[in-house]
Amino acid sequence: MNNLDLTNKALALILVVATSISLVGTFMTLDHLSNMQPLHIYSGRATTDVGTSNFSINSTISVVFITNSVEFGSGIVNGTGSHNCTLNTSGPGMLNGAANPIGGPDCIGFNATLAPLRVQNQGTQNVTLNISFNATQTTFVSGTSPEFGFKVTPNETGSCGNATSAFLNTVYQAVTSANTNYSICNSTAFGWTSSNRTLNIDLGLRIPQDATAGVKKVTITVYASNP
Image 1 (cartoon, rainbow, N blue to C red):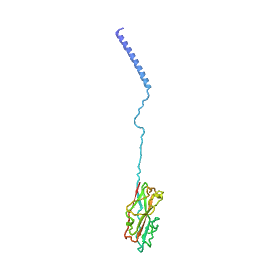
Image 2 (image 1 turned 180 degrees about the vertical axis):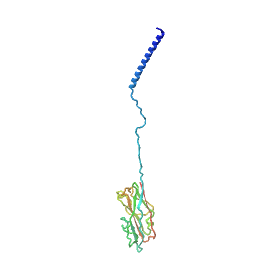
Image 3 (image 1 turned 135 degrees about the vertical axis):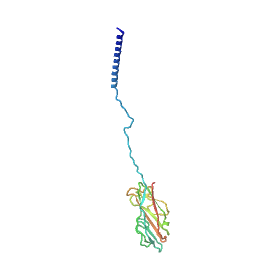
Image 4 (image 1 turned 45 degrees about the vertical axis):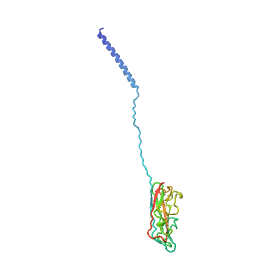
């Protein structure tokens, strides 16, 4: 055997061994792939989300005069003897009653029947009503022993709560101090709901025979507070 034959046989053997190793590797790789689990890819992004909707309701405080004037009219007081002319709005219990005695002997002229002032809560919360006058009974009416005052009653049932104790002025209150606040429906009892939010403010005065002549006027202011 020559050297060339030996070399060819050696190369053939090496080729057979290499091919066998390659086949075994291929089978092992296929077997490994067949046993692998499927690949899962997870994302960090949220799969759900939320939206919002909102609004705000602001509360308001508002009181207004829906009847803002009481016109007692023009007249005279009987000047013979000690006379006083008593006038009032149509509310009960004001001085001498509901009707004004305009035909004498004390009052001549003036207006017979008058509606009271009316105040309404047009806000969105209960309040305490405060009222003030820019003149006293002395400076508004004048004369010897004049009188000027007010009284508050519900125009609508429940406007000042259900308890009469919520009022500070359920009886005639003389105005003896100017620009002083008188509280009505204290403890925020003046209601704001429909049909339960209107008050009467009755006015009454007594004019002495020596009251000075002229046009008499008083300014009445109301405002609300909470508390």
